[in-house]
Image (cartoon, rainbow, N blue to C red):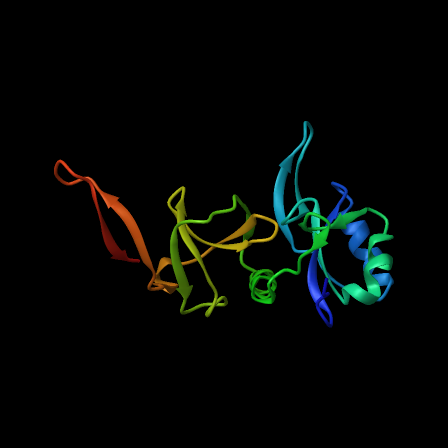
Length: 189
């Protein structure tokens, strides 16, 4: 079994509500970590407060060489394991990490979003997120770009202006029920 050479981004599963503790511990060990956070309003019986929460609850990302740093990373308080297939850790695609980092750095309001595999693939042409690709959705009359982290099967949504978006050409086959025999037609999204 060959291991990937050099440092890569890996998703770490951590104990719920230990994301910030694990992130700080990894940073103190000299690891390059990434814990995307967002602001949310929470209501308690006596007050409403703005709190900073993990964009991917129970997960954070760490950039390291699997061959050299696996044990120190796994020995970090709160870390439960590396995300992968079976017992084999899988790296997260660099473009997905870069997209999430760009969203966080933009300062735009982001929030967790259900993972989506299908939808209108789009690219943002304008604004702070120009060049990002993702899925364009509408929720509560607001337009959002959804960027997925495939390995985690999670996604993040950021509100965008619909004028910033241009569709990516993609071929999709879908059934057509015109007439007694259903056929298929090709449509470009």
